[in-house]
Length: 232
Length: 232
DNA sequence: GCAAAAGTGTTGTGTATACACCCATGG
DNA sequence: CCATGGGTGTATACACAACACTTTTGC
Image (tube, rainbow over all chains, first blue to last red; front, side, top):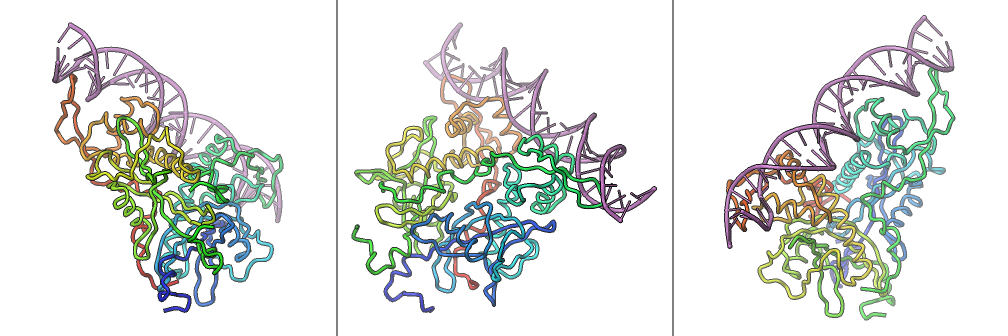
């Protein structure tokens, strides 16, 4: 039995611990990465305990900002599950997070990035959560503009395509991809171009204001219904 | 302050209560209904407290079976949220459930069904959950076979179409609907027909074995990762 | 001039939509 | 024979996949 277990007075076995765990993805170098927290002898998903006065979304943001020094660009709740591990009963609320590679000002030394295809030995629960997060992320690429959040405000179409390819794990046809993006009407050209090699410069784009389409499967009310209410 | 609040010893404000709430839909009489629990002075979503030795899915099933006498056919987790209501901090894990109208053997007298379009005065949190459940159900009609669970094992194509129409809240074209269903290859004719009025009898169908496509956005591991594990 | 990435169109194929009439039965 | 719901096909528009070459630049 571990010290913080209180089977004797009974309450600790009847009320679960609640934690929030976040699967943060980023794309860098044409590959997809997942942030894990380095706890010396093992690595696990960034996690933390919600407090009474914040929403679960806010908890997830706080975990990333304070513990991992990761400035998150996008957060979406994934799934909740109950587990008993080493005698501790925990209900975990899991989140999918996206960020831009290399945007942390002072990278936390407890944050380590792993390629999504070559993860180390996280526990089974965390591994399942990561895999499910990837399933959701891949699915959402198809019908939302979620990929925005993996890119800086200004980018080329090739960069955008590389993000899609890194997440999906397969190559896409350049012409079909560009047609689809243009048809969606979500980009506007900045007018600038970027010269970065012995080849034709790339035109740069930014996303238009209305990014809201990707809150599709996330209930709109989830962000702000977490304050005091009166009804039961 | 309510009696079960323990601000003085501190732990109750630092560990939330956890409950599970289920939005159960059924289709009957061409309309969509939601089950609420009648608590005398108010009505709310069926809810209950998870216990240590069961998964959250199992909690939801138990709530429906024991409290509401509703035999659920389908369950899918919706969303989790944290709220402080009347001084009580609660993390609620919400579920979408489907059932077949009139299948309860001994209907519970605390279960009342309301039309989804004409709900009474549930609290705001529950109302939001119901609306979000409906959004998810509608979305899933399009790309899964979730509607199966709102019908008995044997049914006519018109009955199936009526279910779609009741959930979506709009009429569908009969020929396009039937073509789509047939093209999906998920039905097989029983060979029987049903005579039930002064008109041509309807051929009856059943669903083929492979219903699993609707576990799409629900992680496959969610059902059975809830037992004791060893790693952190 | 050549290597390297940017950029551009057409064609076929499948999928969704709109739409109107005949069929089988009970009374 | 008629009212009622069951059952069927076609034409059109749109979305998606396959596919190859020209452009601009740095060196």
